[in-house]
Length: 234
Image (tube, rainbow, N blue to C red; front, side):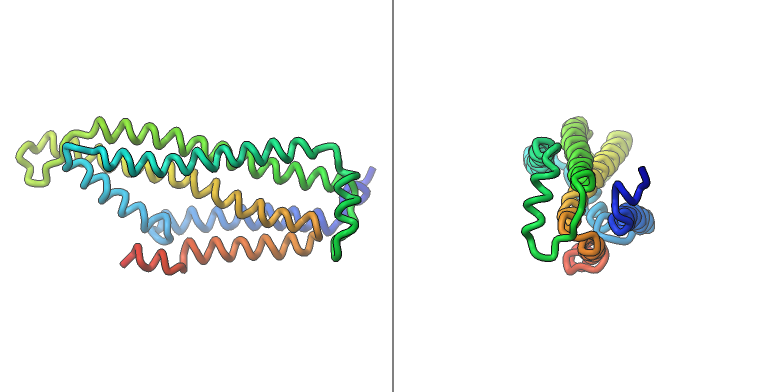
């Protein structure tokens, strides 16, 4: 059986474009972050300042509460991803019913049950990836909480140079750990955006490519050209 008999060429092109667009964007983001540009790099500077301030306080309840609030967001999205995977898994095998439903929608392209199931599997894969990202970010936040509790008092006046240096280094490591958790959270959030673009594939592959481009442009603007970035950098 030829590939064209399984999936129309335009669907194959749309899927390849989707994967390539995500891959290239991830490379650009990684390169820009290493260069110190973008929202991720800007907020990391504030994480370092936050942890250095934390290290100077004896009472760190507020810091633990702030970090706990951030980790709860990861737990929520991890649960949402798991629910989405379960819902999509329940619809597998019903490609003919889904095809009949889509046939009644205007501008929806004709397709086969096999292609429809491939689209469902793609969305499942995206949400599975998001689940692992959010779950790992949630776990890293717990590790960061432990490191906050283990941070020695940092005294900029150097009344105790050895202890002060240890506190500063521990604070910087903790900030780096929280930054790693944020990277995983960002990857999970981007997956939700890409899943929205994937919905367009159920209607037409050209709409899928358009939605993919639209999502990438939104992400690029928010990461590198947003008002939020300018305020954080100010």
